[in-house]
Amino acid sequence: MLIKRTYEENMALAKLRGQSKEPVELSELGAPGALVESASFDTPEQLPLWPEPVRGVPNSVLRSALFGIVQRGRRAFQQRVKKASVDGVLIIHTGPTLDQGDLDVWEQTLHLARISGLGTRIQFSANGFLKAIDRSTGGKDADWLKGAFARLASSVVEIQDNKKSYFGPMLIGGARNDESGRYVIEMNPPIVKLFGADGWSKIEFAERRALRKQPLAQWLHGFYSTHARPFAFKVETISRLSGSENQSLKSFKQELSEALLKLSEITGWTCDIDDADLVRIDKRTAKKFANKVQKLSTK
Image (cartoon, rainbow, N blue to C red; front, top):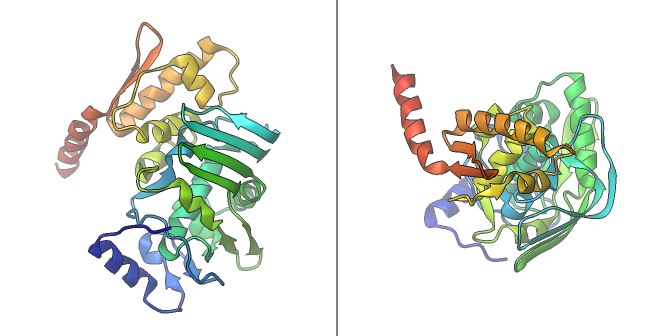
């Protein structure tokens, strides 16, 4: 697949790759201890070169319940389950239920893969990876990371987003050295087909990190980050699209109100639920919010 880049992007990519077969250190890109080495692919599929402060994610993934709101301790195995999604997107999932923590891991893996191209082996330390997604480096989170990679490797998706489509695993698999704590992970090159020129969005990573441990707020952040001017959605629709397991719409509405309040605090967006139970998001206030924060930080 041919991806058009500016001269500056090509120069940056050449610098990052070093124009050699030597491993490329990614620690300078905010991923401590991470590096990439070439695999046996002649022409790796290249992801868009988004900058370090953001994460690039296909819109189809964020506009669905693929990475949903899962209650702690519940991990149902799904057999070709059609996930809730917006019109124009079809997602069928086989594998363990995926949540927002798993999305953190998938986003970070894509983030590392964007430098060398999909189809290369990505090497990194567990500690560096966990720090990058704002997790501790203790044994509990190290075990959680093992589980997250296992869930992603055992998840097969069929995604159709208008003319863009993908069928295959969320990641191919990899290996782990328990003594050194280092991983080698491989992504499936055809995933690049979900990106295209306009099939993905830049997720402000600092904002997502600030919403950690609040899965509904994180899902809302990802979902609305794919809309420049968000439509109004019914509370019931948000419940379905987010994959919420809350069977009470009244209770979910309360959860949603709290999540929207937190989302507004972090992003500066105006977020509310009107009398007709429509969720309304106005992102035009974010610029004023950012300017206010900057002024306060300089005092």
